[in-house]
Structure formats: C-alpha cells, structure tokens
Image (cartoon, rainbow, N blue to C red; front, side, top):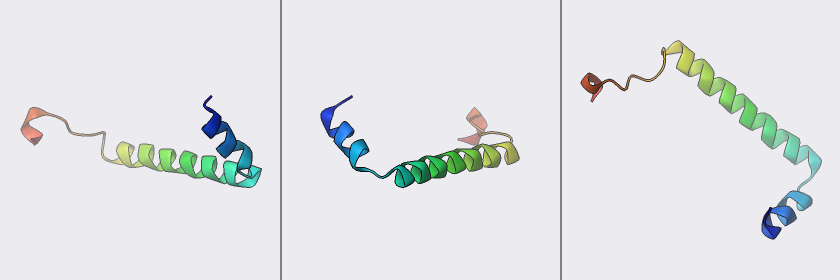
Length: 48
C-alpha cells in the first residue's frame, strides 16, 4: 500500500470509514436494482 494512502486511511475517523463504505454499498445495491428493472442494458447493434 502506498504511503500516501496509508496516511489518508490512518487520518480518517472510523465513523467516516464506515459511512463511506455504507454509501458505496447502498449505491451498488441501487444500481443492481435499477438494472433489474430495465432487464439489463440493451447493447444490441440495433440500439445504436
């Protein structure tokens, strides 16, 4: 791990670390939910 990244992680509070990861998890879950509603992305040649 680079030294700069270690310094950033060491300086961040545990609460901010947890909140950031929780926000990323919620964003990923929302993205999967939206994709499930649209039946995936339409990448067929006719779409373009």
